[in-house]
Length: 75
Image (cartoon, rainbow, N blue to C red):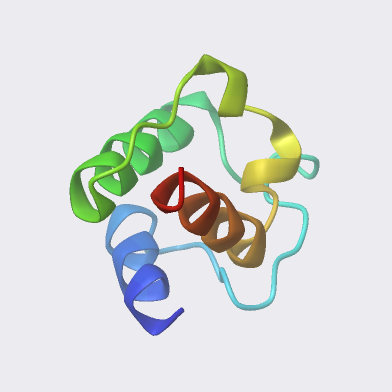
């Protein structure tokens, strides 16, 4: 979790990823942020987030992103 939080804070330093639980629904992250996050997660965790994974519920919180990463790593 700490590793993911560090990575996310480097991409979007103004976002409080610990506190926010509706990053997409509340418009805190925009499409450019999501593209940057997806690219970094793919590279850093050696996963492939595809179009089917680009659901708001996968990116609304850091916990949801971590769950997505674990799911993709175990495929």
